[in-house]
Image 1: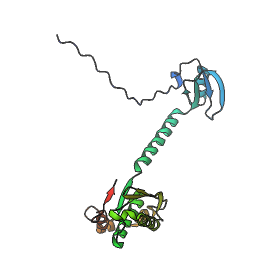
Image 2: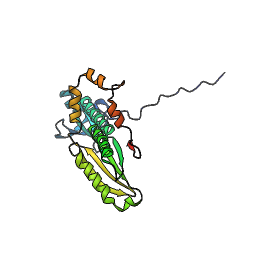
Image 3: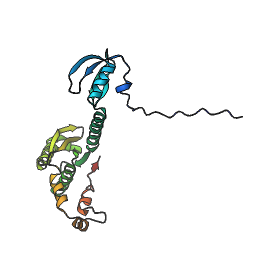
Image 4: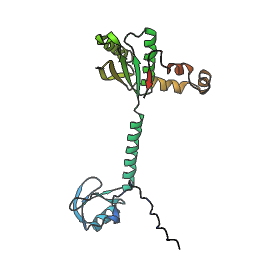
Length: 229
C-alpha cells in the first residue's frame, strides 16, 4: 500500500489582523481609555467590555505590552475602514508621482526650444515632475552659465504651471534642474476637456482619438532626446 500523503496546510496570509478585541482580550485587567480619549483607569476586562457594549462599541487592545495592557473603546469596524482608506489614498498619491525628462543643448534654436517647452508644459499639465537636462559638449563646458541661463529662462516661461524644485546644478557634462507642477497645472486642460463635445474630439483626433499634433510632439527632435520615465 502506498503511504498516505500528509494534508497540505493552507498558507495563512501574513497580513491578517492580529488585534485582540472584545472576547479575544483574555487578560484579567486593562487600563481603559474611553472613545473620546479620556482615561478611565484600571478595570477588569469584564467591566471594560460591559462598558464598551453599553455604548454599542468595541473594546480594542491598543498596547498589549503595557502592564496592564491598554484597551480603548471604539467602533473597530469604522476604525479599520478609515485606516484602509488612508492607506489607499497614500498608495494612490505615491503612484501618481511621475518624473519625465527633457534634454536640451545649450545652443538650441528658437524653434526647437519652443518644441521642448511645449513638452515641458504638457508634462506639467499632466501633473508630472520634469527633469530638464542641459548636455554640454567639448568647449561648451567652459560656459556653464549659458546652460543655467537657458534653464532659468525655461522656468520663467512656464512659471504659471511649474516651479523650480531643484535649482540648476552642474553634474559632470550635464546641468540638471527639476520642475514641479503648481496648483494651476492641468486646470486649463481640465476645463477644455469638459467643454469639448465628444464628437468634436473624434473629428480632431486620429483613429485612436488622439490629437495628431500632440502625438508628433511626443517624438524627440534630431540630435536631442525626450525620455519619459
